[in-house]
Image (tube, rainbow, N blue to C red; front, side):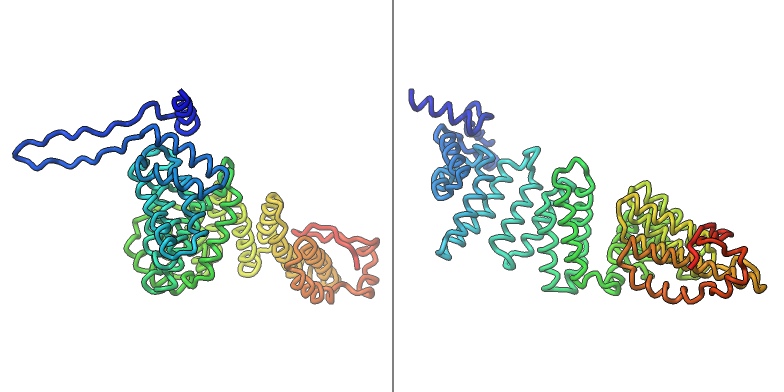
Length: 470
């Protein structure tokens, strides 16, 4: 009676889904003229298995891994299909014993066991809806990486890649990160032979981490964002992000995929991410992609290409398209960048100062809405330079004096720039020092008392701002 009570308790605590023991599959006799088919029997889940599952699970909960090993090993070797905890708990047991072991032969046995365990898990639980084969392959890849290091990099990478391809956005964060780490290690061993593989692995992992980071319902979104920063940094310092190296890999791919929108967009995004947006390969990919299916990336690429050709009007039109796409996709930092770029072209190349201010103010407003001050300073500098370049009045003696009032308004913007964004302080101070020399002098203001009464002055024309007389 005592044994039956213990068994009932074990069934409830450890494996409530097991209502009865599984029986071996019956092997039917093959026809006489054919060889008998070999049918592998399912291990029988005995009462002892159920009890041992409860025993090792309790020990693992209390971090008594040495005590857990005995009953765990018994279940693992006799009824490995009894419960998924054999593998989740087993990984903890093997890891703890491996790091506690001093005998090299024992460490080697445990290392091999850590990998073998995942193969067995795939056999018996590979169809699990929550942790399917693809998920388990990720665990196998992590085991290869932890227990074998550089000795099994290729095996680790293969398992991790298959896992990520199978799990997609539901991939384990550590699996995504390790895919990049392992692929980077392989790339360092063979930079020429493994560059394309490393770039592909990085792209896949970085994109999925980005998706996870932007999913509000994902409780690990913040962690995913930080890990994306990590893999992006790995790629940036790897040398694989060298623009010439990317051109060597993707030049032919663009020519061969001029009607393949997915490939063209993928290449354009990669080039943008690693700041290779002056490359002819990038331009070719963007131009071809924009003809097939306009997107933020293709529009921005076409804007850069138009500017390179000196067609700044077209460049601004493309930036307007990129801004619309980026707003739809809620990529507001990109929106602010495109607005600023359009402002620069309007100011420096087209001399359309009112248009330049419009784009610069829009960029400031976008960043303000995001709670970001860095980046606003550059737009205030552009506005200040637009003011300083403007001549609102005639060339007669009075007009010559009044034209100098724009420098007061310009310096106001330079001061504002460094106030909101300390990163532009040095540039702002240079502009202040340069343009303050051209203020209307006291003598000039004395000659026009009707214009300069009081402490403020309204700068008219398209500027239309009140500034302080100084």
